Image (tube, protein in one colour):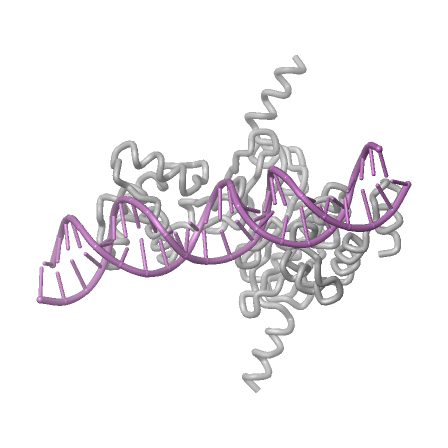
Amino acid sequence: MKDIIARLKENGVTLTPQRMAVTEFLSRSRNHPTVDEIHRNIQRRYPTMSVATVYSTLKLLKELGEIQELSIRKRGKACFDPNPGLHHHLLCRKCGKILDIDFNHPSNCPIMAKESIDGCKVEEVQAYLYGICPECLKKESDKKG
Amino acid sequence: MKDIIARLKENGVTLTPQRMAVTEFLSRSRNHPTVDEIHRNIQRRYPTMSVATVYSTLKLLKELGEIQELSIRKRGKACFDPNPGLHHHLLCRKCGKILDIDFNHPSNCPIMAKESIDGCKVEEVQAYLYGICPECLKKESDKKG
DNA sequence: TTTGATGCAAACGGTTTGCACTTAT
DNA sequence: ATAAGTGCAAACCGTTTGCATCAAA
């Protein structure tokens, strides 16, 4: 969080209150917010905050490699991840939440052979797991007694 | 191809020329076409073919489990896969094509432990590999001499 | 005749764009 | 004075929807 602001400064980015607000909110969030979630939240403090600015800030942060946009969408809306590094995601089919999943593929997994799967050069892998999150699993087992 | 038509018939689906055309075209295609790709192609033979019908047919085929819609998009457009089974995809960052990738995770891969990754129950995995397709790899090595 | 599929056009919703206004250098 | 960022509204574009028309059982 501190570091990201520092890096933005280093990159000559003008740190306006709006950009700070987006950056801060996204850094704190763990639920891969959509544009309107970010926008609505920030509007509580900056009533004039516009969606256009949210979009432009997200674009900026993405280009600087500080955040990432997921390949998948929440009900048709883009969602953003403050962690730009490689990791995977689970989509809970009960509650719709998207959770970060950290795991490494074992060395005998074909996708580790980064040079050749079906003759393709693989540079990055994003796994989307579909299933049920711990919270919803707990609810289920509670119901059963 | 024959089988899918047969299965549709079994399911009591009215096999209109439009539905046949969509089904046929998608079955033959290997490049995960978008709605307008499907539409444009079919319009050559059925000039009155509407996008609405393409959408409704794709929805129908999806619900019957005969095709799948990918989680990712080609320039913002949904793309469809005639293979509804579990497999993965490579997105070529040179030419933008989406290729099918078939591989199985080894048994020591965490995502095979379907009960528990970070406390989540995993039911299905879709891996999106980002890299370079064989065709573009060839072009590259040809250039180098 | 009734049912359901089609085609058109309008509506919808997320995202992008253009432009006037503001702010900081 | 110049350059850059913001906010508003309109435009954009893929998708969905409503409805009149058409075809089949």
